[in-house]
Length: 303
Image (tube, rainbow, N blue to C red; front, side, top):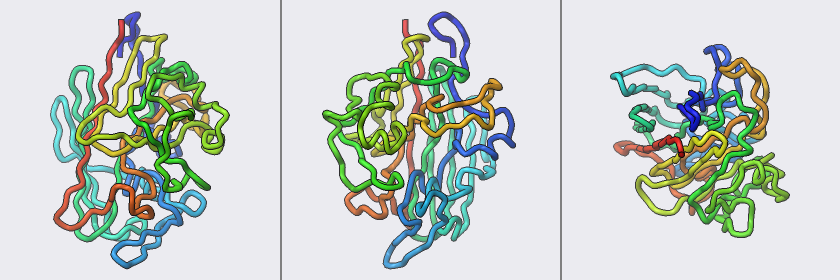
């Protein structure tokens, strides 16, 4: 993208080689599944059966398990402005039941990237998919996103307990660092003196976005460069991760190391640990049903 001064900037964090992506623990740019975010106890109870899942974060399953993001997808369609990839996850993959076929289409138009995800299963299972891209609108080689202004269209968020697992409460954001209904500096909020922020080493929480259909979830602005990103989705929530655990290896695409808050991930998705919270929107997918989600990233340069 070209900023206010006409400088072309890479605003997405990443690595230079496939080997670096495989060695990384940051999930840069990955499609995350089968279940984005966490499932407590690394166990799934569904239709009276219990399925042990692969644990990769204390006693929880995070982002589908140890290699949920390290898969080779097949290109099934492509054009100048779009590409569709497919992945077949076999029954028992990571402990999850059912064979699940996932397709993702990335479509690019002036100022916009659109991500369409679909999934089908041959047996009852749970599906929660998201894209895990990190952005820094001052440029991929900028140290942090602390000077960015973040706005989230949500008046409730999911507090977490031990291990980042939601407590089940849909808490009001009012009076907390999670009140992002008006733009606020990322640096101030990720360093706020609040027990939820301290426990998560910054922002690493799901916000409950009201409404239905494709609607605005988040807006990010970098005043220094004049670049802005608006995230829209049809999903019920957005996980905001301010990158508190980013580490300097492997190196970024610019050849420079990434540190904490080098980028921010705005992950549109269903709620974490939904299988263990019946009052959360259901993530169950059954034979004959289609999981579908759409997310758009709209970029602009402000005057």
